[in-house]
Image 1 (cartoon, rainbow, N blue to C red):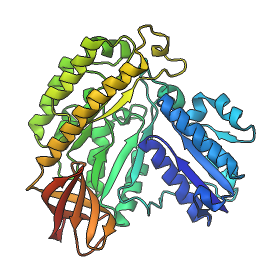
Image 2: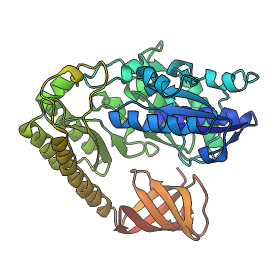
Image 3: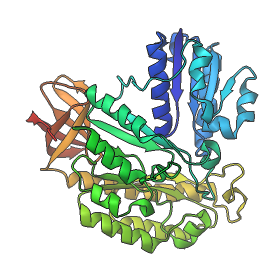
Length: 417
């Protein structure tokens, strides 16, 4: 059968879609685009913001218009099933906990997922290590959509990564809803740090990237691991606000002084590490002083990029019932102000790399003799290389920065950890 698989949202969704795609391909099905008249369309959805909801509805409508059987899964289907039914009563809705059953809905002969994942279109595969969140931030519905934290067994994760390494992949991205909670539900819990150490012990070459981690979860063990060569010098720490009052309203379990202390500990280990963050602008009750506290905190500290989200009400959350809503035009103004700072910080960090040698995973050829890849410190690099070898790590001399990219030339040798 011809099957189209469409994915919106986070790296966890992407990882799950990779897994579904792999099994369907192993079963002899053809993966096609919507334009190629699929027999079945699977839409893996997101509901983190109102914008994400809108994108889901648009994609579902496009899938329905093909005339194919449509299966919708993911977080949007958990929270807003009625909106999906309003598009078409004929849509099959599969909740997150039952995603594995999608395969049996399509192919009853396929009894289980294989650990072998086909990631031929991804140079740096995602490996999901856990799912779910035990926290209740006042603006967030993901704990309802994904449930409580549930960890994959260490042996299963290690087996998957060893398989990817044997296939020639040299970076994997460890992902989940809240990876800092890895192991809380497992007996003899050694946490994320224990998992990382076992992966390093059981593999030889592959480097590990952490997708997102709460600052408070970076303990002494994680700090030690940041000194390991095969742990990418890149962390994404979702701050959300730089103002203590807003953080309290958000039910974020930290204050700004705690974040400052953690940043100092991280930079003591590696001053060149690339730190990114998430920020919500226009949270209920955010006035000009609170916004400027966030702006100044981001300006004064070494976050090198921000993902900025204008606040939007999520159904059933505490924040949706708060007063002090910020007008849309003011949210847009604050977004633009932070975006300007974000672009400046990105440029400054990229410019600081000129003259250095970075370790870059080759992702795709751009034209003959030119390759695009991702550096260990999470920068996009365009470099000259006589031979494109997908997923292989190259040492690249950085010559200049231009239009959001680093430009360089591959040195002769490949990396050997």
